[in-house]
Image (tube, rainbow, N blue to C red; front, side, top):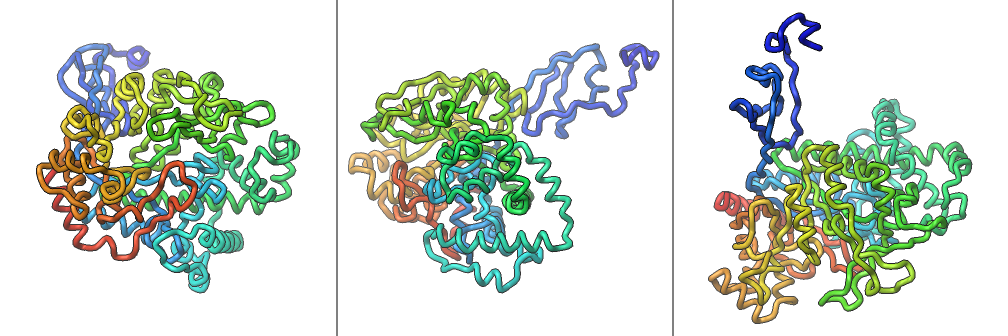
Length: 560
């Protein structure tokens, strides 16, 4: 057609600057009919493709991730005068520290909103797409003229070593509300807020309505609301929106501010060559805007009651298994709708992070489903997950898959094959490496391949010193010493495992900041299956000093 329009033969067509843009994270492409690869700009000039033949055949080459190291540190743990870490000066100070230390990655826990009823767990959130208002920087709002110096003084809390979430909620939400009132009354341009609301409409409207109704019902979960709210009577919800516009706008504004501050922090980090690694839970909380707004996509009956509950089967550590409480997905409905719910969820994570860890990855292959009337996970069953079909749809939508598969725990060949089919990076945890099967252990460094992220431990593990003190027996300690070939003790075990991580062939090494600092079990972030005293640990000011910087610099240089 173009040839006819221009009145020339195929090889005389003037393609001008027509080009094919490649995915952002793609590797190179080899032209099988003529020598040469895509240029560094990730744009294939069409005029160069058809120099010799009227067709082009390409073979993609997966981009290999260069070696890099980073830390695991959640936003809540950053020092702050306001009781909990936030997206402001404390976070940019961490980015500066990482840059000076030669680090390329900063891994975080989920940023979604949680509450007391969820144990303040970031893995049990009220929304899979919203941000947690408690992470908003009050100081940034003050710089924008929405809070005064006196307001900031009111928001200050004792800089304790653990987050007092109820106290933070009380003071911070009051000040955020005050900032919104100032925003409404100000002459500031409101158009960016309005554009944000329109852009995020697919989830934001439901989330704001969910939050408002939940507050009006004293925090009750949605499945205990009156039927007209629980079952989303259209006329009832329209009335709520029309009669409470300002309060619903307030909730949306918090999300706008969170998104704006997060985007600023991400840009700040990326400009310093620091990539952000996010964490996406597989399941979503039963009491969440996601489940309330799309009940047909979950294992619920017509009354909103769960019919299938997520968990894991019994193992050596738990005779009853673990019953998590979230409803499982209705994968048949998900598939019928083209996995659009998942596409939107993953798109949000791709916007927020440079890489995203897919928690409980094994459930994409098969998941443990427990009947709703069971009190333990013992009588569950394995159900086939969406598998390759799902990831083909996701790959078609996004091209590159910037994900890390959390392939830990009870996994089999199906899980590993699914991970490898889509060339997803896997995980290695050194605390799992020193059992009696050490020579063949999948977590011991001599058995690694490159496409992995290695950790000394994760947020669910003890600190390395805590692991050595409380969880490693004498034979285990002897195996560690034999493997390292040097004397190991409580004072240097964290440094020994960090060196193993850095020295391994894994492309990425991530170390919890508690291990960098050599902290014991009191600094642990989470104890799985325990409901109290989790997610509260905090850095104290000046812990990340010049000595720690040099320590990380030296390691990074030594191990490239």
